[in-house]
Length: 421
Image 1: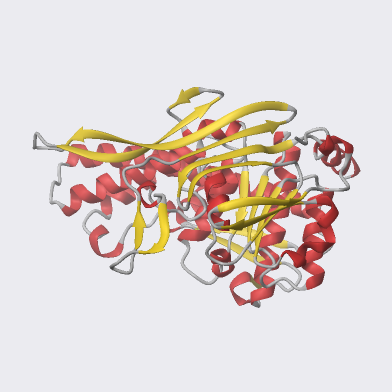
Image 2: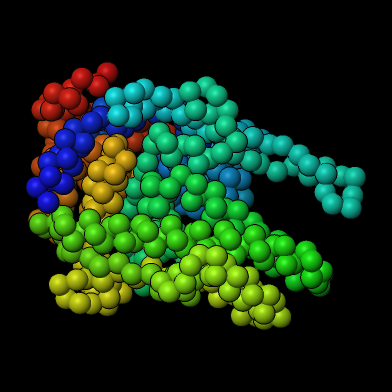
């Protein structure tokens, strides 16, 4: 354990973070550039000014659909004024873009992602249908794989919507777990996206009555192989975090125990992957007739269960404040575990993180972020809540669709000071 702690402290001194963020035609920002340091970054302003939009833009530098989980077409620059019909005025057809200069383990890289319109021929017609797709560039080179971003940047985020994570359906909890898996397995995001695409195609064929057995069987075999790989990665990450938490329990936030509740995961406990793939394919085939009414059991129904270990209580039965503390505990464990295993720290995106945390836990979280040398982007309507780290943070105010730097850190570790602009 002493060796583990020593290695972790050494690795946490390595510099990882965004140095410059640039937004173009992104939601309420026509053009925005922010130069930042490797420290807590406090973004404050009134509600509705676009603070969360900045965090969402950063989240698109990682694989996936961003922290809001929206469609690409939903991200349009708009004029935040009331139009004659009482609706926001959208500017179209502008394409949005997000770019960043980052430092990862002492090396500088440029990352960029954007949406562009393209077209394709609709089946059985000669008409072209336009749609939007996301493109990615790394160090100026275009790549077709979003998963490549995971080699250079890793993000962990907490949003107000996640305060209800343990009390709603299982899908948001799976997504939460999958984002943690991405940091250790860059191909996991691609597998999840491919599985979802195949499932939609399989479902559509059944719904349309196109019950071609050869076609459906081919899809089911692909889905079962991907599904078992996804389940295996989720199991590995859950076990990894449980082991780390056991060895490195937090001194302020509650210790958690993590479990997976799913058919495929349980089968992997007792059978080799190849046997589970065969079982999964047979299951999909047997449930063709029921899918339109009941859905299908499998990885799309797996639940990520969290327990307050000291109280031996499931998270959904804990108080709102305890649930927030459990989320913070998982986030900190993921950040430290990832740094130890991958060699570079994640960037934290914390939207109104002070909500449901008492003063002691809020200040403890901020102190840990500073001590762990993590770059954290934190939004708030009340900057005074962060006075405890005021001399170690960079403050920005958001108003009138612009961002203004208010203060810089006055006390910084030497390794952070070297990255400042």
